[in-house]
Image (cartoon, rainbow, N blue to C red):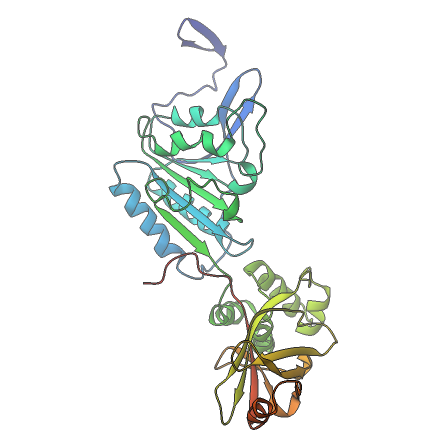
Length: 368
């Protein structure tokens, strides 16, 4: 039997009760019961199954831990980006490395009123991981009279009274983050943005994951990825299907990778004897069976040149990372309603090719 006294209150426990001066370095998750309040439960879901880590994850993990060691206050890290592109993997890598360095991990996966005060009362250095923060805190509407969940945490992230803490937030949609989180390096020092893998990263991944007999499919997959964003979940599924004997064509017909919305592309038409013309940021369904028609203008105003093409006639230029439709596959017409001299000028241009590049997400960080 163990008798535990807290203030004037004495509670009786069995002999399995153990006491620590500090939390042991392992992973915990915050739980709550109405009768007893907050408590920590042991958490076993931080396991990394990948044999090889792609990208610069480990370099950034060490960067965070070095900064945390040097900081004399809390350190905040935001991990943002679309699903399936490495945020959770990075969080697990950081958690494992923190535990090896003697730092306990506390996972918060739900909003509970009063949780900020509970975490703040933990008087030791810990890493607090808020997984899918934009859902668990950003999408929660507080009861009438209560403070907004994200705002309730501001004091926790700023405070240094109860042990220096490493706060890590993962989110898919940064627009759901409180304005006092983004562009506030005093509160969240780092913001790691995770993007879709590049063509070279996809090649590296597929050469590792596919049997040699399927390597001939890799360039087709890379070309497809320049039309449709593929995350690592998609690539893992594609590799599984090909290794099971499916062709890429048949695999993509049955996988849960579907054409829900039109993608955006930039189009450039090149001439042998003149400057190129552009159509930028255009919504186009690259996977329908209809002719795509674009109107080009030399001055971005007078759309006199019309180009029609079929997506099946495009080939992928691996050197320049874009789809190309050669001049003989293009249907060229002119708007004869413009003044005759201007029409004659445009007609003298000899079309060479049409280049198509998918519009990628704008980088959130400044280029200096």
